[in-house]
Length: 640
Image (cartoon, rainbow, N blue to C red):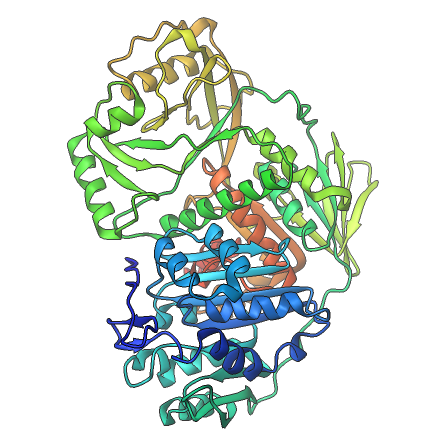
């Protein structure tokens, strides 16, 4: 979806106004006053969130963010506030940062909070953007999308609902009976709802969806408003709560470190088990990985999910640095070269189709690309100004340090098998010794995951070799170049280039033929640059990617493959949510070549699933990453 930003405009009384919809953004009397009276008080806040662990608010129509700021202020000032507040809001036409800042200057009562919101404001690209505030006790998830598309794709259980679109007579889709039914799907018995509107269309739509509503005094010149609560006719199952927040995470690589940090931030104790002995954090190897978004003309599942992952990763990494953790990385920009005229035309068409802001992605002609790179290039390409390179070991060390005393790590320990005993998972050594036990177990051990628990699909182990060259061997680019391979700028006197994609090769040591292949890729990226390097004398490193056949990671609750086989007839027309699961068992794996892009989002997704919090991405994307997807596909094809 192409995001079209809102235009900054005002009516004759000086109230922020949308010419596209012919309506004001809030009451002429007071935007903050309306937010407090209609939405905060209309949902009986702060009383309803008092002493809760997690409280979730769903809003249709973020606008200037005044309802969010009013709620934030109320929550912040409340000594009995909930432990964690989730605020999920949908906006089809968000303001750009400059317009948002200009609007916020009109409301000095929110100044301190508004600056924090502006500092975290995401680029205007479609999808869900998760922003954390107040030491992560307050989370804002913004869905930049049409409400009719976004609401069915949300995975959450709302405690309170703010209905705040433009007037029903001017924007009927935001108040349609169909949308009210979808909103009701996200409610539970007792969920409150409030809106400034008292239109019959709205009242009837809410009542038909299962809400009991009443008119009450509106704000300012508005005589009436509606408020109510969800009262479904059919009884709902009681929510299950997990009392002990203790998990085993197997694998201390980029996946396991992110999962551990995200769970620790929610108050979990973590037993982290890693078969390898990690090198000391103060002496990281030369290897660095590249991170950048994925772009396609049809904005496919991979592009949407990777965009979410890329943007969330940047926010998490900056937060780690603000907390005092050291990362070795650079947002020097990444240029993905077209290589040939046919690819060039496709790249240009993809950028035009998606309408991305230039700070996120744009196409550069060769001359402009060469200016950024500081060297001659074979073509132009996609320019990702906020992308760059990262040394993964520095990120792993920072995340493990951020987990703090909640983390107990065991390195050089191999888990031979896992077993369920009562309500707890056990990690067992080869001699049967109990390594750790906890109610939740997360498999984040890459290619070794399927050995401990099947997903009904073999995973691929793909060898990758990188080469290290002295910086004096060539004039390197000032940015990261990618294409068939990649090359990084010179750092600490050497240049990293690669990488091979070797199937059927399990040699853990660098090979001369791998260096030769990397030098050939480098020559394609920099055809006008002389490289003085001998493949026989180069140093390098080898890693093994874990990849699924569809090139998407595996993140979520593990399927019960044996139970699914017994139920295969029932599952032939089922959805992912219908699959039998292994209680308390999860995975985060198969990141392939995009570990830096996937890890932070996957950790947040997994922690949200385990805690029962709103998901940080759309339901169709969560289903596309679900490790049960292969079981479902085989059931549908009668191959299970």
